[in-house]
Length: 140
Image (tube, rainbow, N blue to C red; front, side, top):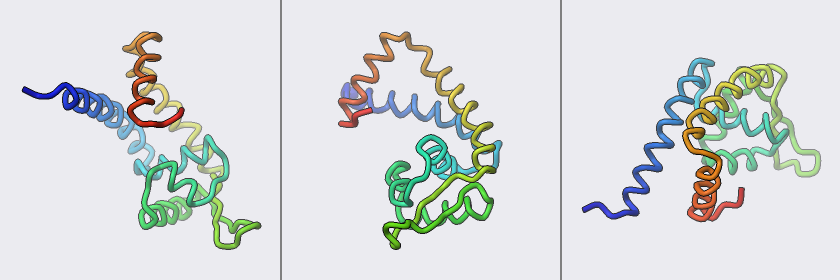
């Protein structure tokens, strides 16, 4: 018999996979990769961030983030400049082209997420959020 904890883990993965699968279709439609979308989304909502801050927000490795940034710069979706206060740091900024792209992509992603989460009523969403915060140790 499968333990309750494993059932919970499997159910969480299935739910997240369903949302990710739907979002992947949107991201792919705009010729982006999921990590590229993650970088653009961070800059779109948070404003200019250091490479390290973006890397931390999207849970990427230093090797991977360099490739993602290079490709986004090549496509003129972001710009990179040296931090005035710390010459070892680089700051990333979403470009006008990146902003215009995210103005199209993000609403579609948000619509997908809201649609799939809305199968839960507000009370169920509050409870789920409470328990997911507890599981992750993360303060949203």
